[in-house]
Length: 171
Image 1 (cartoon, rainbow, N blue to C red):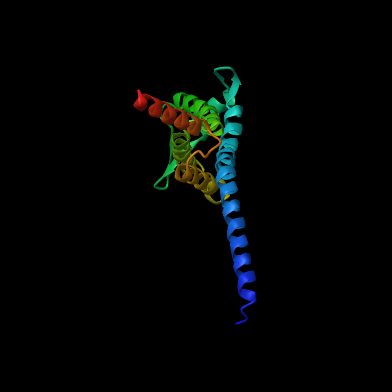
Image 2: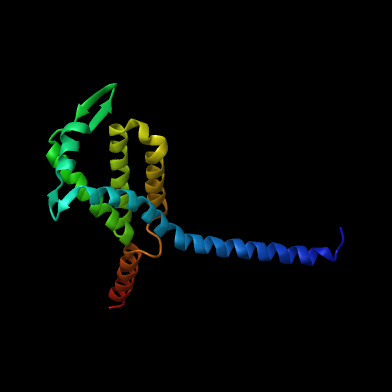
């Protein structure tokens, strides 16, 4: 091996490692808000269609939950118990949970709730797994795994709580 190529090879390796580390730092900053937004948008869009006006569910939403939406289990289709109440809970969740995700507040819990909703939606629309539900579930699990990220209210609250704890300890 030619000794004159070793220093150049070492510089290239160090440069490659530095570029990859910087890329990872940027991705750790950008990925969480993008994941949160990607999961929030389909639910927020759906939630906006559920309402006629402030605190007034649309007749179409009530009709869907009363007559169309069925849970498919064990080869049978079952209606929702208390469909009007379920419609209201879903409509509130489809607005509230995406907003929490976008803000990065109670992020892991909001992602968990949307994962549960995705599972229930899968039971209502069994053919949607490959087209939508798998992606929503993957996003929710990813958010729960990596957390809210640096650009979130959760991080701001954690940082403030840590700072206050350090001040309290010094007193």
